[in-house]
Figure 1 (cartoon, rainbow, N blue to C red):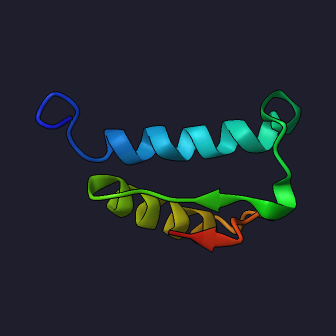
Figure 2 (cartoon, one colour; figure 1 turned 120 degrees about the vertical axis):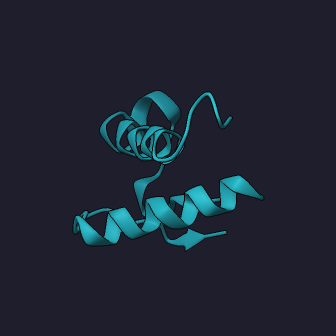
Length: 67
């Protein structure tokens, strides 16, 4: 939480978590064809930032839904 962890630390952490899931789908029993990213309140903002980075960096595997 801010101010201990100001922007962009929270969104960087979320982006790192997304990349980790992509690299370790078996660990999470994840179907990469059915990924969803979601957040509420500040998490909703983080979700938007992460999705923008995914698109900007042209990731091959993109979430199917952003909530």
